Image (cartoon, rainbow over all chains, first blue to last red):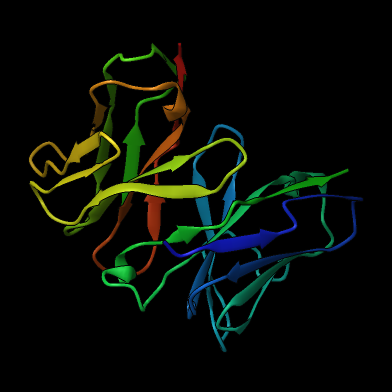
Length: 119
Length: 112
């Protein structure tokens, strides 16, 4: 199946700094990628939909100025957590659809996630 | 609105035991339903799916049937293995839009 990677897998940063997380589709082109946040023992919460070549669509309650999303190419989307604070510590997961796959519109392939810890 | 409710864990079973993880949903229209599995330190992987009522999704011995009348999509496996230990997420995708809605996940541990 389609493979999605994330980098880094784990990052620790100081409060007030910015952190960039990369999401790549390795063997397909993804016009749309999704960013989720997962709290401990909770489900995935969709943060935003990242569209190649255009602005991301943010879910209600997600601060677009804090969570900057750039989808500069068909295989790469980045999430930058700006001026991170301890409450931003979480597990961030990206996903992508493979439109070239039969029925691919109906499935999402997930990255392995990035564990962010803000001290 | 759209939402998914699944049974809370953690669930601990002995090897070869029967597994059921309950999942119910609320949705407008006719959603597609999914089960994803997350192994330790890894991302979510699609386990099985069903796109319309009465469809049965199956994979690796796991099964789930899309029941419109009870708005359910319970996951079952007749004989679990230690390697099935993971967190299982039930999810739906509405028939309009891209968004997936996930349940809170159920942690399964299978002991030898």
